Image (cartoon, rainbow, N blue to C red; front, side, top):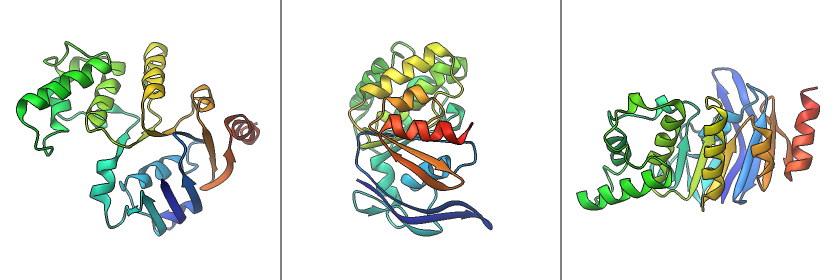
Length: 224
């Protein structure tokens, strides 16, 4: 359960989220809205990348402001641009880096890395330099480095914006098959339509919240 209790967030004197009050328990939740509507700020609040100026955000009762490290062990985050997440020089090293604090022996780390890469169609690329991957492969690598930690919740901030059609469809399929709670910020209304619940943001407020058909129709009305 993700809970935002009357959350307001400001950057300097600019209000980017205004009194957002939500409980999120559905398995697949999409977040749509125009650029600058507050979607990305909302996403970052969920795993404590930022903390609210007012109100509180909790995940399974853990407060992101005071228990952020524990929240981030439960909530994975995938950025729009995989370059923001890829750290190590090779594919295998980058996924293994996520497990550096796991306490697992080296052979188990290698096994988990291999299994995760196989699941994301990156098998056999363990020794390939990360810089030699295509844009789609880089996004899959960033996702692998999050999923290897087996989070309970995955927050994705526009994960297909920089991808071609083939890799967009591939990421769609992978996300749809995940057995965890997914919060997906997206401009892709077809992807949003596959969710259980859609939130529509406009000028820092949630202006629609419900089943995909109704919420997406509301959003389309905003941008006419």
